[in-house]
Image 1 (cartoon, rainbow, N blue to C red):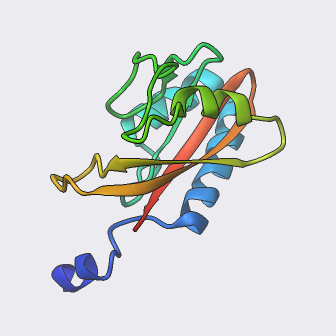
Image 2 (image 1 turned 90 degrees about the vertical axis):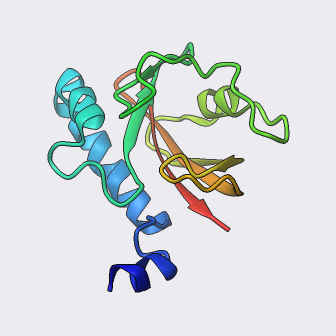
Length: 137
């Protein structure tokens, strides 16, 4: 059964699931920023779903609350096409809005080296830029 689910992409999150997770993450950050960032890193409380996870970054590009990239600065991160993903995420983040940043990257949760479009759903909350990303073909 799992193989059939993998073949249909059931282990990968979609836009609706990513948006729901981002809304949950925003609510957690509003209540207790430090606890929320810790939960984003550990995934406790169901915050890592399929290949989806929330994370935040500062206005200077420092990643906080990420399961594997905690402390990395993405200000100058560019995708394979040269798109300045880090700067775009910072620039589009707005309080009370969810905006999108698309870029090309291999799936970080698999050994697949094929490039996919990844869309980061990005918002601003409590002085942080928070996001959840999902892949599409």
